[in-house]
Amino acid sequence: MASTYSYMFFNFFLFLLITSQFSYARYPKGQLDLSASFLPRLQAETQIRGLNLFPKHAINVPAFDDNELLGTSSPSIVEKQFQFHLLGNPGPSVQEFGHYAGYYRLSHTKAARMFYYFFESRTNKNDPVVIWLTGGPGCSSELALFYENGPFNIANNLSLSWNDYGWDKASNIIFVDQPTGTGFSYTTEETDIRHDETGVSNDLYDFLQAFFKEHPQLTKNDFYITGESYAGHYIPALASRVHQGNKKKEGIHINLKGFAIGNGLTQPDVQYKAYTDYALDNKLIEKPDYDSINEMIPGCERAIKVCGTDGVSTCEDAFDVCNNIFQSILQVAGNINYYDIRKTCEGSLCYDFSNMETFLNQKTVRDALGVGDIEFVSCSSVVYDAMTRDWMRNLAVGVPALLEDGIKVLIYAGEEDLICNWLGNSRWVNGLAWSGQKDFGAAPTVPFIVEGREAGQLKSHGPLSFLKVHNAGHMVPMDQPKAALQMLKSWMQGKLAVTGTKDWLAPQ
Image (tube, rainbow, N blue to C red; front, side):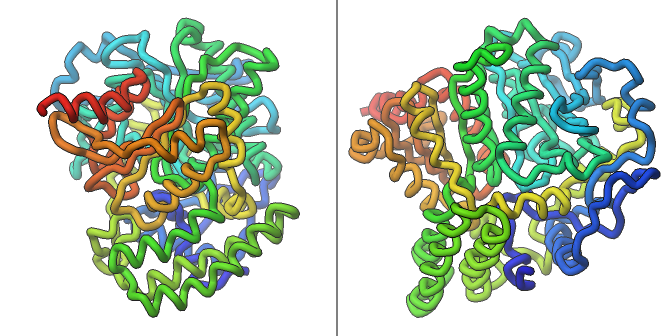
């Protein structure tokens, strides 16, 4: 069992904060028994209150036969178009592009249903298809949808307005509630809960196959995988799975062009070592603290190495050992917001995302989305707990092969984030062993320019790019929405490096 402090600071995503759970939604026949120890749930309650979220359940388990929702002879995907009442003018009429929500019956599970949103591009239906994966593990995509890069912004009175910098202005974008049990996704079988990236990536690959079968007109479009925080695990795994499926001609060819990870956790053995350097550089700790906390690093490295050979209890042990590094920094740094070190938390409250939770649990909204009586679970402590054995795995190991095959990779990070900081991300990117490693290391760092101003620092060579974003914390699309949209557009168009050089030199 983890210590109280190591569980308190396990989060690697704005949304890493897991839900406080007072009860589970129980299936009447009792197929699902997801009892968890009491202490982690109490600690999760403290964490989730930091986001002002109060989900009623640890995981979605419908108290009915799901045929009531999907029908006895429903296809693998059940999708419906929906409309929310929105304030403001989106440009074209809302009727001119589609907003969809749906459930997919995960084909390699007993009873799992994956919920998703799909928003057609506001600009051009030939724009790339982008999938966004929120981290946690176990937090819903709606966090990004309503507060970062989705089509909508949500106000305190629960009204919605158009997001001028939503990524649907440059792509046909999919937001998925995954792994199973997150958001509106659900199951009635414990064996459907995933514990590693093999299960997660296979489920997502199966979903994408069904999605493109449902939307065959999009198979010709370029396809990109994006996400944030713990999605630094999900994304490389899914990219490898899609690339493998394409090579083996397993199903519909998915036109994978690249993937982007924002403030991710990808290679823990490198990133945990960077904590003290980042904290010292930003004056969160002093040199004596730095020296003392660094004494924990060798034990963390050993634990991660053992995790690589066993992968179950030893990985959970590594999780506990290594998170003591982060916990020790916070004990010294005090009441900082570790997703954005420019800010402090007011008591236990660091962000307030309660409007999203209230909005999505309204009956009229659930009816519009077609989810029936299923209640929204913003973050699932059951999913989180199941994935702890995956936490310390190195997901950077599969990236070089993708680079060699020409898959574009963008790693970006807001410079004010401590928990998945830019320094640790930069180090694992520079350490990638691929044919362009030396040239990438020698490449100049240039300004990333948005509307004539420097918005970040960019380094690129071939298919690999690293971008440090100024004046942003863990959630770059929330903190710097204009820069984030420009980044996505330029990167997908193959012009990100051009944006960082020619635009900068032009005034001279």
